[in-house]
Image (cartoon, rainbow over all chains, first blue to last red; front, top):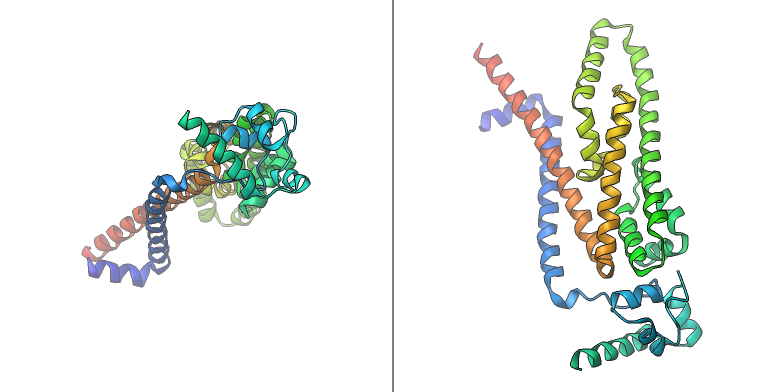
Length: 114
Length: 202
């Protein structure tokens, strides 16, 4: 076995190096897969918090809010606006992401206790 | 960075998906997985239309494949012209062409979606090795359809988890591509070692 590797090192250096590199990368990707599955398996990491890029429709959809529920919170009918970023709407209304997040969380929490 | 990319998908929609899939077929690093997942997510929320988003991604991918194949074909003609002068090498090139045509089709298909990081290189190599154009196009178009349906479909289904999905799928396709290269090189090494052993035994 060792002799074989020595022989390959002498005659097929490039091939052996390429193989080793590919094997190391495969193992690295496998390890990352394990780490990711632990990270995303944790329920604390599963809820995607509000971000500036999101659109009203996207927020309503991912939090399971009806259009009128969303309108109560932000004063905007999400079905009436398309492809508008949350950050622009919040700037107009002088609100922060955290404030909006608190309102949505409160609404979702109230609904689950009903 | 993710924030900016997702904002761009919303602002430019289908045109951006077309450009991203087109360029990614030419080995230009593009976050095409994340963007197609995002496209699917915004179809689910009602911000984008399914036909234009999926259609643009598909059209970009198929045209990108064709462009990569043509670039490879041009390079292949140069190689052929040089080799024509040396009969032995010309025979070797013919052997490569025959081999590519025998196994190339399914290879093109799988490198569109299952081993997608290898896709652009298969386009160049297929063109250079003289893979039949109709065969390349048919298998490629089928493979791209799988790629677009899987990514846009997953984005649509798990719209509220697109960032997480992009992480997982990006990693999984890296694992598949590195794995298949490792197996291929391992097989090559194995044969080299076997040949060396029998040469020493003689």
